[in-house]
Length: 521
Image 1 (cartoon, rainbow, N blue to C red):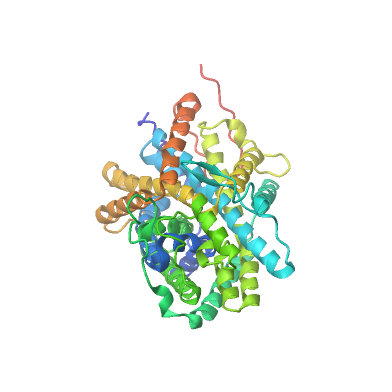
Image 2: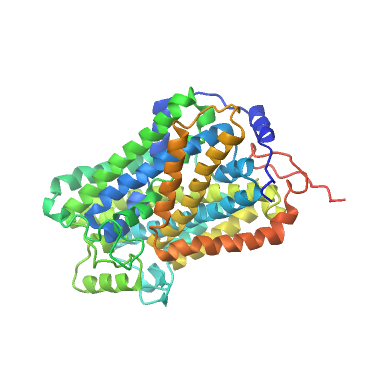
């Protein structure tokens, strides 16, 4: 089973037939990365990070950014060698074989689909906050939040279903089904809105900074109080990791980059460094303006205990940063910039649906490639005759995303998403080293610098962050993986094109259905 490797030469031959013009320089790559990275995490997860680490979340941004940087350098080498669709799934198929490629593709469901659910819940919080600020109307709590989940059970006291999150997830799914894609111009406008909103936040919040709000700096320490999981500065870094995902937009652009050996690392490190500085300024402004202390030490955001503490504070007329569903808008309203807070909320409402769209798009295309490889039912790769999109897999993915968004809080969704992402990045870091040993002479448009230092650091960083996720999020990956293995050995192992000796490569085209597969004699 480990010998079922998709021929790298065939993949590369296909890519060479449709090679792209090398036109991107370091500045364009850096801006591309900034646009892809800045978004959901900083708008949505600031409150959850504050509950885990307090003001120490500023170190969390640095740690998460560093792990992303070293993983990105590994990602770039494979992206430049295998410049086709399928992301880490395709890279793994070409290097470590079908079984592990399946596991990576299965884990990427947690990265893309669950991340889309997290963004939907984040959008819901900003939408409801803006609606209340402008009109005074708000949905009952039972319809604006999902229940809280833990190993001890489900608590419906905080909510039953997040209706706005379901609506936005299904609306974006329908747009994607009928073929609506973001144009480069539209995407650039949304990036400008996000950056302008965060710049405005920094300009208004930093002058209101009070140094007393930074003490105690790390109330939960580096790894959280004894007996807790996913807490402290490193635990917050494991959650904040979500705020940096998107840098692969730079690594996958390696084929279109002039002098990729020089410009790809500039674009990667430059965009991650700029975003880290941006995030630190935003976090510093939020902490300094109204404080960021946890409701209580060792209490996990999204838990029933946390919800009860926030409800008790709300009954007293208090809403600390950690309890807000729209953290940045809440900070500005708290320091009497109500209209500016509304503008932050409006920016999030405009920009976040485009992130949901791109997450769903990435997920459906990975499913699409897996279906064309025979590892998933090929019916999923059916193209709609009018819309020219893989409508079946898009609809199923959208329903899954809406259900998760309806029933889980944003912090738990982000942690679950990170568990899949960290596994995929770990596999990419390992794959780079395996390919260096197995095929050292192959042309590499970009070579990871100091690969025998950088790749192990990336793999170790992913492992450390994974084991500092909350216990529930860590358990999701092996359980989800076991379900995936059952599906693989029950279906994919028998139906795999590579296993049946069919090695056509068609990753270079997004929307062309697979050729008919001849029956096995």
